[in-house]
Image (cartoon, rainbow, N blue to C red; front, side, top):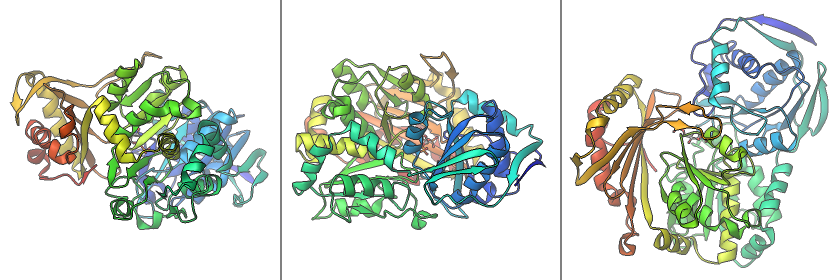
Length: 543
Ligand code: G16
């Protein structure tokens, strides 16, 4: 076993995005690419010497090889200990929990989340802090700065470590503890939810289907939903994590989880359907014949969380990312809760959660979570829904209907234009930015603009500022358009257009969202010149 220093040169394009560094897998597998980035993480966090980190990933292609490299680099740079999920598997929320539970200095999560996996698809790496949450921009900026000046990295030359057996081993003086990736997380869930009530619901003939999309939640969902809560075998489908997610796109939305949607909209549909993504932090909720948007889901969860033991004392406050619909704001207002609006990216919730200002957070991008960890958590959202259903004994459709009648309905949809030429996408945003001041008072598709600005966020806890976080255009009557460029893609630019309108007339609350939003959609194209700039006449994905 030998510690060596390898000479290298900076590699371009190692700037972390909305959630860590995501690239094509072959890019990550290229000479020095992973090693440069990991050494830059060590530099960005002030060195890894004497530190204890958690390591795990979503099991995608290259996960196992990358884990070996990261362990050898941690040992070479003097880390004290690495706590690793068996076979280098850990869902993102389970990694966050492990970091907090063991009081470690942070952790490395190998995942490109909902992006497809495989040699021609995506891979990713992100660093989480000692609070269990994604590194804030101040840290990712330091990591990025280090990627630009790196001249060498340290690594130990050795045989692969066997990560398949639970226990403790040693690598060049560094302890490696291999843990069951599920056990601690499952125990945490049991403290938050009324497992007896959910068990009784499932024993009453209530049928559920959870689609793991061949990603990391398979073992978690099987252990919790089937083994602990008694859902019949086969309730969890696509449960085996595969390096290429079975060739699928592990993004839980009606497009990519179509198999589940078809089942849930069939005549003999189960009562409740859910899906999770590559690394287990996203979720999709669907009842028999009804899809629940992520924005509605977080609003329903906030309105009913007190029905679960972990939240029985009420919520401290709530938060949503700016493009997420304002359904949550309506619940917060009715309940007298503070509601924070943050930029896209779970990392922006971290300070609010740490400061005890909020208990539940949500994003339109299928992310919901609470202060139990510092990541969004797919299975957590599913279990909270089940707990609520177990207490209310209503169908998902009835719960939604009741919710909209009480709080009003925020019709919502996101239109994505993927793989757009980056220059064209930037030109669109620049042009729009330039005309914001003139928009108020103008009419588009029967809507009158009331406000138009570019979102900037001043963190109320540490005072840090994040600007250029998306353009928002508000109309008289409550409709809204938000436009921003995604920070998680790996090819070209993805233009995201978020569309919303408010409905308080109960007789108009059951329309198709695209239909209800027709004017807002037309206004967005006219105002932003989407077709003119991109040449696209329709989005690639509508969620
Ligand atoms: C990540 C972030 C989320 C964000 C989402 C979409 O999710 O953690 O906070 O909402 O990306 O970001 P963008 O619109 O920039 O693509 P995940 O599940 O990919 O880690």
